[in-house]
Length: 465
Ligand code: GLN
Image (cartoon, rainbow, N blue to C red; front, top):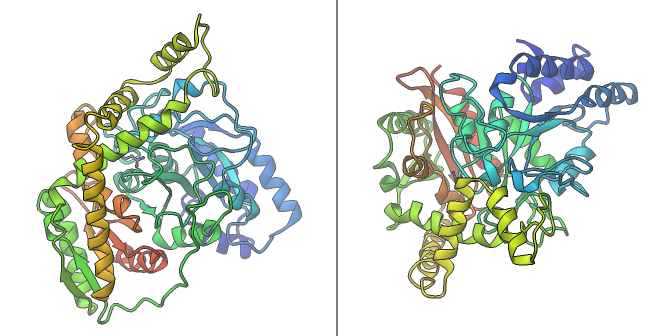
């Protein structure tokens, strides 16, 4: 296997055995980047990464799992002294004053930061087409969407330009693009990785997401970056890891979530189901009662929160600053020029849902429904359920085929985990009719992140291609 396609754990082994040097590995990623610029997954590749690798080589291994592991960062995380754009014109010229907590924890591990990754503007989207830098292309089939919003994060790892990548996941943005490119995508329990320094989309749904080749790789990264930080009052520590044993383990199945999905997603689900059954899992069928509404609840809350968080981009504080005669004109001119169409659409929708005449019928109702979902999920604890088997994602759609409504509905299998703050991993399971990956998801109760990833690793091994 070529060095730039190694998993995080394989890189560690190769370093230990002196079979590979950090500088050789960075060079391999850099070459791969230069050869495949058409994929458009990096907004900026840091040339100094090679120098960092040489310095680490001189200093010798630090003993950390992620020592000299080259990775890249979605461009909605602050990296001190570097541009931060969220793939939007509105942040033009903005330089981060400090590191996001997750970035500083990776730096403590002596990882090598390869650069800033492309994404849908402000992390809104499921295709990768809404970036001001142009769309990212799917690595497996350039005529298809990369998936979003963490399009660059998925493609950089798939195309051998990074060992793993930071993503964000508000409603599937780590899991969906990972799946479209044949990788593993993970959203941790809400708060397990501190969000401070990650640009907000919808703060009650946002989590730091991770994309890598395998669930095991993700577990290595998670354990390095998880845990409470004083910079984020919503952050929590990881629970003590439990030993995974499928025999007698109760796994929830939400049959109504499965009904509307693509037949190939159902097939991937059945493959995982059969395997888990053969290992002794006991399935518990759950009816949440709101399955048909889940996507609406998500979009009402996401747009409402986004309209509020994005109000900070006004031309006076961050990035783009246009000349104007008054404050009102400055706000209007900057926001009109700075935001793309999808962002404007969501701001309009969000303000509509939050407007005092509409609040009770829309935003508040969605919040009440969200509480109902959270209560239902919490009740599962009493019935001894530990994991959830969830439908994953279909093959990536062809560019030009998915309108906004179709794209919004592709999030329907992802958002339950964000609304309830629970962990979920998307694992490739089989190839669909066009020879592209179709995935399944494993979820679990809040805090069961390692168990979810251990079970995900087992599923990863039974994928049938
Ligand atoms: N596709 C979802 C949306 O557009 C996901 C966003 C995300 O997870 N950042 O809202």
